[in-house]
Image (cartoon, rainbow, N blue to C red; front, side, top):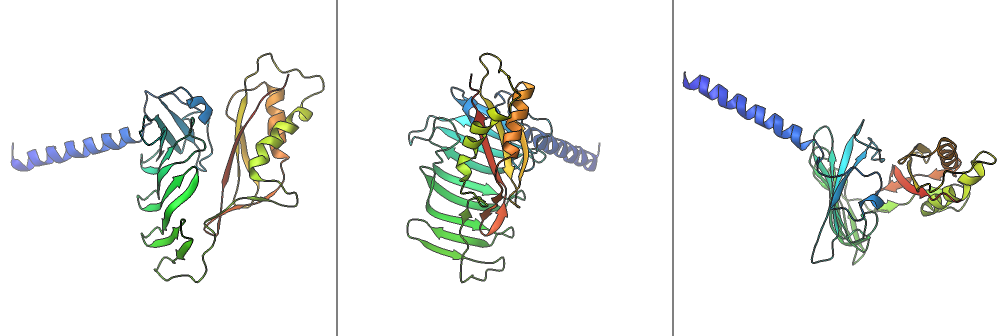
Length: 274
């Protein structure tokens, strides 16, 4: 056997190993349970949560664009959860965050890193008690600094993708705002809870011991409610009423991230009244 033949075999083996590694990297850990809401992580060592292309939660891996891997921590600094977000097709890590709360929904704490799907860093920031702390930095896709924001001192500087500074910086994040009615985004789950019962058929009685029904939807970059879905099963009339209550929510101005409209993901649950 010639050296050239041996070399070809080594190269082929290396490429095969690389492909196998990429395939393994793109798969969520099989030893962790699938969860559809952060509440379901309570008492667990970890879990996997799946999302569509808008990072709106799904009920499982079918059709998933990406997923989060949650792991419970015993950290001396009080960090209780780590979240790592991956793109399903490539297995590329696009987000890493920590939480100090009992379940990883609120309570962001410590360093947060976000990447573009190319692998270029998009954002680095530190949180304390779910609030921005220290210095926030964001980057353009070409790697140039887009924004530096010293939250402790109120110093902000912004640059275009060529490195030219802007005179005025847009707010880092502006929440979605209701049009007409003065309704805060945080109150939308309360509205769904209040209104679903009126949309049930006359005389409908929910099955005994009905568990909470989890749902999710997004307010898109035009301010429209889209892709409402239930994340846990519900009897048909109840499911229909919840989705109708979501459809009747007021119109919104979209959320803005560094001056650009972005999707806002809303999650909630309906506690069925007997």
